[in-house]
Image (cartoon, rainbow, N blue to C red; front, side):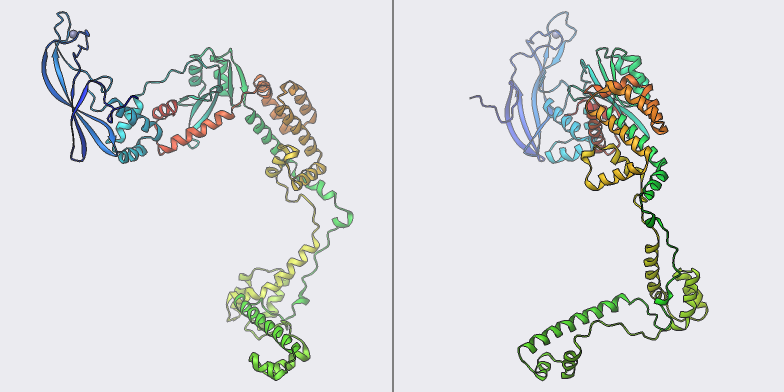
Length: 547
Ligand SMILES: [Zn+2]
């Protein structure tokens, strides 16, 4: 079995001592390479010039910093026509000639940097026992050579925002390997065209419905088939449908009203307000919520006592005995037996500071002044000494009556709360995906309006075409829309015709931009991890070298 030495130092380095110096694990070692070679001509050296100590930081050990002190040699190169006369012994690839860290430490910092970004990276390296700075981490990320993109035949291209909706970049994804290939600093046609130009092997470009990527592909990848993204096509259609439904709201509402019977349609004239409910003499305010709660609590207690009395009576106890046991008077028990349990009766009217103003308030209410504050101000002016809250409580019974009346007189037709924004999703989804209530609403809408009915048919036809990838039916569909004369759908059709080949491809081919959308989310995640301050180049490095 091959045993790896604990420190995994390369051959040719011999450890001569290990000690802790200032909380740094310091490993002293000496280079034992047999004959160091001249880096220029490669000839082994025959004579040593001098020796010196190189100090190189290495991977941490159990959370402690590690420093290597390596004794290396300076040698003479004796080859007459070699330009180098004296050279230093190399430790490559373990450590680069002038480096102060080993290659493996360098790479670990780079990997941590790619995974976490500068600021977060520092928190990780601190814990691990790696001494570095945010700037070093960023430098290491930037030092990574651009990975060659290689051959790519199917790309998805889309935009993303650097800063919420203000500046945009472009992301390019390989639709076959699902890899993010590149990010571009803007979303102009020129920039993406320049990128595509370098890849004449591209066969398919999946893109959104905007004009820029389409123009770029036309110019720089004319050999490629353009595929308009299905999601975007469907979204455009849903926008047109929403506009249609919004325009037809009145039509739909009227249609729904017409489904009512003649009797139901009859608008009953609102009755004059039923002041007979509220005569000045027995007009009581709504109970104060606190006292009402207490009253109910006491009522509960009384009810419970009554139950107890009945039970004891059935067991044959006399009134006096029961009164004694329950702490009641015999008179109460006698009354209960005679009259039954007193239900929570009508509260008696209590005299109130409000009474002298009651007649005035009632007449104002009948004139249509229902604003409590206004009424309070008016009677206060006349000398009412109470609070506004008291007035509001007196108005509660009036309001309650009013509500009952209004409910009774206005005919209630379905769909009066129709909203195009909501209805559009009933239209766009497949019928199987609607629950019973949604299905009923949809049916009602389609019954109420012919425009809605036609729209629904067209939408579902389009949906089928999209799901069964039968782009060849597009022409027929376009003609039916033209016949329908629904103007919002007409402008959707105009848009489709401008970009028809790509739309047909989108409705036919399996490729689409769903994958790209996913990658945009991943990109946003990387961006946020860098506290949203990612410079474009740094972002690009992290995306292209994403782990
Ligand atoms: Zn040489």
